[in-house]
Image: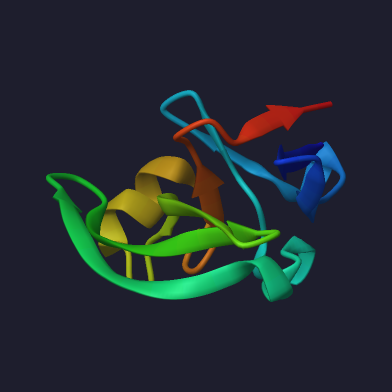
Length: 100
């Protein structure tokens, strides 16, 4: 699977290393092309997963605000529910395409 934006592959990993939660693919940190990511101060809270942090995705000078999110410390009940520790795994939205 890969995540791409503005013609650049920003993450790539075998599907066996990804985690699917609520229809979103979460990529392991080792699969992220960090050169395209900048930490954001934006946060949201999921009632069952916990507090999400965000990255801006920046490709060729274009910025996708909050284009990627992750849970630095998901609730333990969420880890039990998903049956995998998804701490720091990254998911995408806002026009970033995830394809096989």
